[in-house]
Amino acid sequence: MRSEISLAELGEELARIATSPITALPFSEIEALEKMIGAPLPEEFRSFLLDIGLGARPGPVLDLAWIVNETRREHQYFLEEPDMTVSPQQPFPITQTDVQGLPRLSAEGIESILWFDKPTPGTMLLCNHGCTWISMLALNGELAGTVWMTEMGWVEEMH
Image (tube, rainbow, N blue to C red; front, side):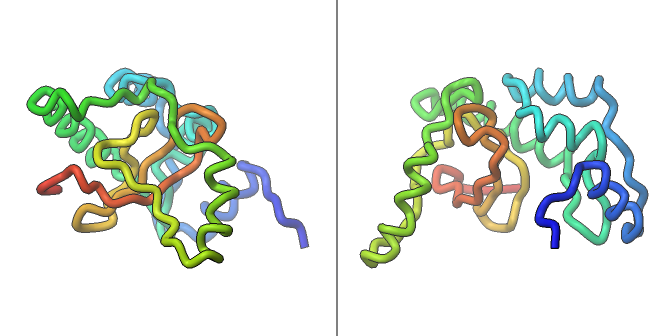
């Protein structure tokens, strides 16, 4: 059994099972998203948006309006709380070494949660899972393009 498939093969499979069509995101929308976020997207995510768009049903579908609205809300929060300000251009602080150490922590009975008391630098908001749980995309560093689920402990209210 082959473990890897190409992006084109994934697109064909999604198109086959989708109840909604796959619609690539125009390059101009991707540029506008990068400008609004304040950093370039990782090449893999950019390619996904250019080829697959926001996704297709029955799989997960990105909500671009949510990403934009919550990013704007976060920018406003930073204006009100400047000591919380982080930049998506700052380095993503988690490394491959950190990730490799997680099984050891688990074996020692230590809860292996990476916690930040403010937004994580080098990321963009990607998806809301409810309450204050979100997925964020690492924009740079050795783990650029990886998706992280975290609790937004710095947020009092999520819309």
